[in-house]
Length: 265
Picture (cartoon, rainbow, N blue to C red):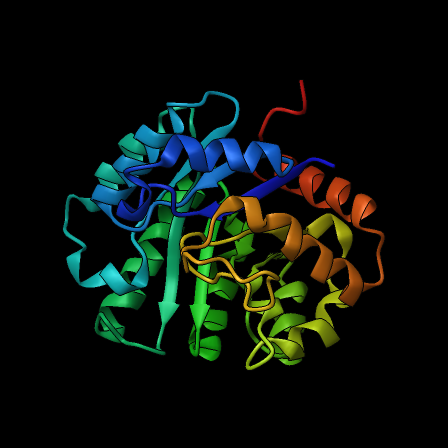
């Protein structure tokens, strides 16, 4: 069974001391490729550096997360475009709206979001999207740009059925994390995930965040790792009514087509 993790923050400082061991554990768990998320200008450069340590296995994105939208400058789009020219960078983002925490003013989030979409449209690159508690504004903005975007994935989807249907109507791909394993807030995902067509369903860990709460035994370290992706896969497979091996093939294939990743050796 071979998996692709479409979103892991491997540039995070929590991986600085044992990143190579983390990658070894991921490979042993069957995770063949990982897309390293860029969440600010600096973190996108770090993500690219991490991706370069494992050609053909690690790739990265270039973007500014809505939490960091207040940091956007007149030079930011050009900086991301330079990163996007590197072969390891396979998508623009993480970008979108987060009205749950509002770490950046909403006007800044929207302005930065549209700048990312303009960049992705101009470069013909996929876009890696974030939305939390901002469905209506997010949907309005993406709807205006969708015809100009090559491909778009709503990463770490946590919304309800109506939101899912709206994103599917826009031909978005859907990324599912360990949120679906959370008995406090993710059980609704198990009821609706079967609606996602297999050619648009992908899986991710969002490591070091979103450690699946139902792992047994519970890891001593609360940090999530790509090696836990098979657990997410099995949970999604049960909820969607698919065999894990078949779902592994379809999600890996969807990820490789979406990001333009090379196939298995």
